[in-house]
Length: 88
Image 1 (cartoon, rainbow, N blue to C red):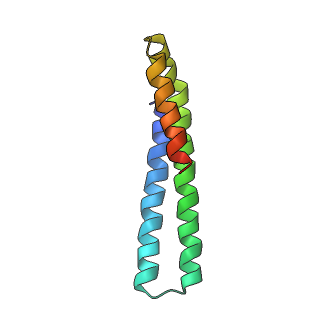
Image 2 (cartoon, one colour):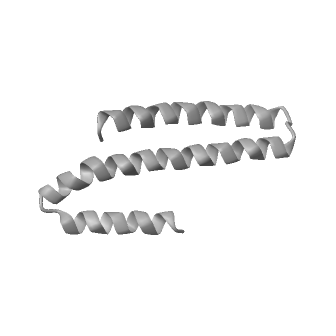
């Protein structure tokens, strides 16, 4: 993984961790359900952004490296699998 993508992913994970802790505190404090659900939606969006960062990093580093190494079929199979997982 490229250093900038890794740094971005780690920052996003730290944010997500803190956000999830906040959601836990909200539930423990019996916060109004709609307010908690708004926060869980924000967590989901943050996870989607993290996934986008990881995928972009993969497409810019790992995929070209694998193609240069002659592993085109493996790369295509992995990308198809990712696509299928994302659409479940």
